[in-house]
Amino acid sequence: MYENLRDNFLYGLSDYYYTGKMPPRASLNMRRALDEHRKRLAKKGVTYSEIIKPSEEPREMSKKSGNGAFITLEIAAHYNIATEISDGKNIIKNDDSRDDVVHIHYVDRTMSAGDDSRIPLICPNCNHHADARTFSGGCPMCGTRFKINDLYPCVNACYSKAYLMPSQTSRPVLKKGLLALKIGGGIGLGIAILSFLLMILFGTEVLKALGTANGIFVGTSVIATGILWMIFYTVYSTKSTVGGIRMSAREFEMRSTVDTKKKMEGTICQLDPFFTYEVFEGKILSVVRTIAYSDNRKNCSFYCGNDELIFMDDLVDIRYRGGIEFIRADIVGDYLHVLATLYLDNIYYRDGRFIRKNENFQIELIRNRSVKTNPLITAYSINCPHCGASFDSVLSKTCPFCGSGFELAGHDWTIVRLYCVS
Image (cartoon, rainbow, N blue to C red; front, side, top):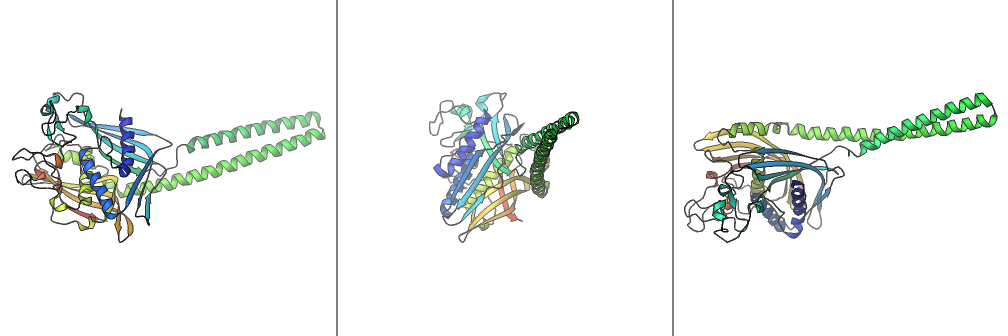
């Protein structure tokens, strides 16, 4: 099941930048980030393409965690991903290796979720947010009818890492080459012994000549096979060493992210027993991308800081490098403050030139300390606490129906500070 969902999502993501059709099962937060990204690309007059191909070695691994009524499943599989951004004259490509490890996080229901009528849902048509019993006769806002399985599972996060080691398909070739060398050597040794015995028994010049010719032929073949095998092994070993060094350097730079999950869950779960790092990670990635690509950050409920973040105005691509460093968490009044660093690979388009930078964003998030994690809460699916209306609050901090102010921090994570650190 999940393999089909994974492949459909990835190929849908590749097609999105051509067709504008959202990839299947993308979470609502991810949909918003993708929509803002497409608008930014159009505004800058650049095109974005992403080509995803199956790897020669479709290895995969999975990891599951839960938070009560919901579970998160992380699937890592090998693909080849190549991206290209162009303004018609200049092109910047990202294809660091023939093999990439793609990480996809799903949010799904547990089979023992209990009373389905209490499960929080969001209408896929108008984004109205309520529990499942409210939708028993269709969405009360737009009349859309749907099944719970139409909404679950959803893709909460997706990112890739270049796999810089040589293809594992090279290893059988090495083994076969070594086997051929052994067989060739054994045959050569056998022929040499046989020729030697024939020369002793018969002692004719013909047999001597035959033995010499056989010896030269077999010896040359064995030596040539040995040399070719050594060359191939040397190249393979060199690639392995270089790839290992590059991957080690990358992981060393991000060594502070290794225990982030343990630290963050250990700290925040004291206030929020349903908190899971995987849900948090996917949500924050979508939030940061939405803020970065938005042209209306002042009214964006995801962000309540004072800085205008003008350094983000030229961003055309944000690639997550697979790590968040948890720095600290503090309680200030009624709010929980979390300071963290996201490790990114960003592309800017400025003055007709593409600029690629390995840089990190440090963010400070706040959320009311009494709030419990709900993976389906999104800024633009919140009901107004005063009149109950459902509205898109991503680009509006005021309810358009009653005029009441809205603060996302009372419901979900909000960024109060965001700046770039090298």
